[in-house]
Length: 274
Image (tube, rainbow, N blue to C red):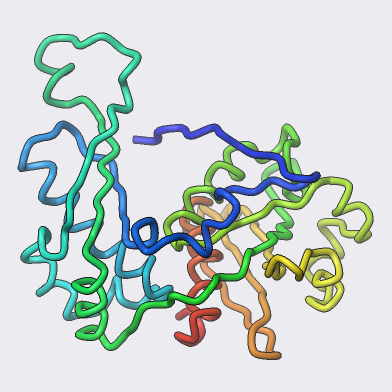
């Protein structure tokens, strides 16, 4: 089920997809996870808590690998471990209730809050640690090649509306802030879909606001007729080095999670994405 969230905020010609300051959010905001559940009964809540446990461990550490760690299965057998509390938001709140379907199978966004010390202890068991430093803000320069259209993703343009929305979710999942540059910024940088893949990160660094911790994340998103899916490549800088990685055979939601999550993994000091 795809449930749309369309609240995009323009800030000085750029689109910030997380509230300003989210990267330095209080611990209570960092130690949260959320998922969609169908109804509010135990048979949907318990699997939702298991999904949220993996998510919060990634959010807190920045380390994408913990979601695939063999020991996570053992922790997930008690999905309520570390839970401080949880709440539901009715995603069909504006719709009237209708018989059995309307009460049992109504979709909710479940937000789970965790006890920081208990999540930190779980991370230690997985060989990881919390990433509590202020997090950089990613400015995404993305060249898109789709069937019959090519463009650089920009803020508030008609093209790429669902992609901007998807980046918002990817940013939240990694507790990062993502900014989509304006068309004006892209034009001033002289970027096109042809030149962006070869543009040095140093040149993109000149187009971001380093005073507020912004760094560039450059990428290409290509539709593959063979795979009937997307392929994405990503580049960012950390520790004076350029890091690159890629993913293929995915939808663009997964591609953007890979780009933002991979950046979080690098910037948190947990190595390059697989």
